Length: 177
Image (cartoon, rainbow, N blue to C red):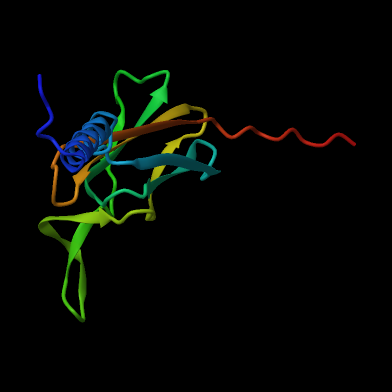
C-alpha cells in the first residue's frame, strides 16, 4: 500500500486522535466514572441503667476529589449478635440526609424538599449520627448503607457499605485494699 499521500502532519494528527481516544476508553474502563466516596462508622456506648445502654452511631462520609455526589438515602441496621429471631434487626433511615424546605430567610426543619437531595462537593466531609437504646449485655453489629449517584450526569446508582461491632461495656472490678 502506498501511503505517500499522507504528510507528517496527517500522521501525527491521526496518532494523537487514536492515542487520546485510547486513553479515554481506558479511563472509562478503569473506573473514571465511579463515584469515589469513603464511608466510616464510629460508635460510642454509654451506660443508661443496669439493663440498657445508649449506643451512638456516627456515620462519616468523605467525598473524593472527582465530581459531586447526590445522597439519595442512608440507612443503619442494628442487629444483636447472636440474632434475635423475635425482634430481628432494627433498621432506621439516617436523619439529616434530606434537603429541607428553605427560603432566603427561613429554614423549615420539619418539611423535606420533595425530589431534592443533599450534594457532596469534591473533598467534602460530613457526619450523621443516630442514638439507640440497646441491652447492656448484648453485642451488636452495626451496618450502614448509602445510596447515591453522580450529580447531573451519568445517573448510575451507586452503593457504599460499612459495618462495625459494638461490645458490651465491661464492668470494672472493685479495687482490693
